[in-house]
Image (cartoon, rainbow, N blue to C red; front, side, top):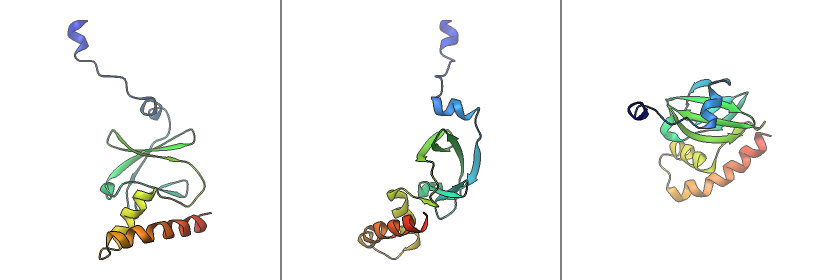
Length: 120
């Protein structure tokens, strides 16, 4: 037992275990930072652009993994756009390359509120 113990790995968390049973979707992250699930977009970090992520729906949550690391969790809903504020600022920074951080910080909340209205 002592010899075998060093070769044992810890049991994965509940979300990962459930993902073996549930549906898993793999998607490449576009420049909008929004992955698609049932017609709605859910944001991820900008470092994942062009990378393949696993999208795991469990109960009312959407778990997004890159390799085996969980990158973010979103509540599943019917809104068209589901950005976290940080992800949206990052996306805005990519599209407004010549803007200052202050301009991006100022514009992000305004645009997010407009997206909320559009996505309803």
